Image 1 (cartoon, rainbow, N blue to C red):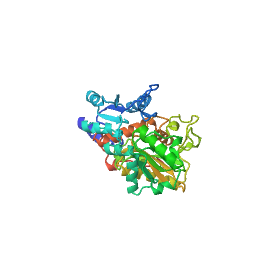
Image 2 (cartoon, rainbow, N blue to C red):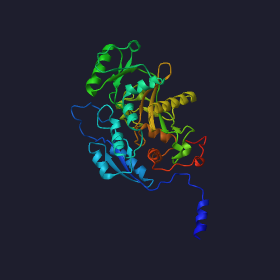
Image 3 (cartoon, helix red, strand yellow):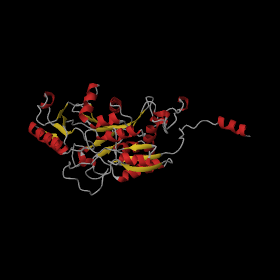
Image 4 (tube, rainbow, N blue to C red):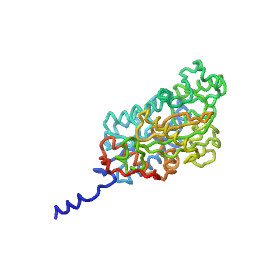
Amino acid sequence: MKSTQQGKETKKPPSPRPRLARYWRVAVLANIKERGKPLPPDVPPDAGADYDYIETIDHIRAAIETDGHTTVFIPADSNLPYALREVQPDICFNIAEGLGGDAREAQTPALLELLKIPYTGSRVLANAISLDKTLTKRIWRDRNLPVAPFQEFTFGDEPLRPELEKHFPLFVKPAREGTGMGVDQHAIVNNPAELRERANYIIRTYQQPALVEIFLPGREFTVGVLGRPDAARYSRHPTWYEKDGFHRFPILELDSSRSVTPGVYGIEAKAQSVGAEGAPGYICPANIEPELEKKLQHLALRAHITLGALDVSRTDIRLDAEGNPRLLEINTLPGLTPDYSDLCLMANAQGISYADLILEILYLGASRWGMIPPREPAMIPRRRSSGH
């Protein structure tokens, strides 16, 4: 009987979904924003804007637990090394922004590398570079990716480069912040005096250089990327991926014309709930020509690969006065608040559930650390032409 039963088992078709050897203990790592807590007097007025509320952590944990794993939240503060030793997670779902400094988003990945703990998303170098908008633009420019002319001001009194001085208005923002920090209506400057005033304000307030670039008056988009060349071998949804291993989300257009900061997608606009008065319009899929859609997705993928980002990212792109797309910045730790964060809105527009999005990021990360067995190439379902 035993040999017959074994024979029957060998004839069963293999499961199309990679099987885990066991369920995992997953630690969600993040910095938490506390409602109503006053800011210290020596920090910018929007300090901590890129931190997450505890409700987002709860949503991520619930999504992970739908597939049988156990979760724990560990704040990414100065106690993190000791908490990791105590909890001993199998893998960390990392959305930690860091505690300060010019490469703070790389702090948690660097610690996890040091402790040899698997984690999700981009590794140390990509997270360090992507937060530095000036360095990111230099790399993209050197790889012939389109960026607007720019200049970094370290002291505030540097001579303005010729390619900028005749192209007012200009746009001024902190060189090493995210989530629209330091960006409001005053970010647009119309003459040298306004430029000097704003650059000095940024340098003084944020204790970092000011990035100055030509103001781009055209439409603004954000473009999400998921996957890597071997993603389909580990994915729960291999049909999501193109032949190159990447999934293109539908493009999201950000219409700031009706926001509290018209024409500027800054911190005040981003703080508004989707659909609320004063919030930007979030149009997904964007109403654009197929040629522009293809171009934007191509640029976002090249931006992702050029910086060495892994598994997931979101790239912001704006059109110039002639309608040409220019790369603004890349987010290697895109927000994951359901029905609010840009990447989640893209997934919603494509019919991808929040749980599936979170688990896909988790399993892509886990597969890099040998935690998921790969499918044989012959067992990878082909992508449907009408699929995701």
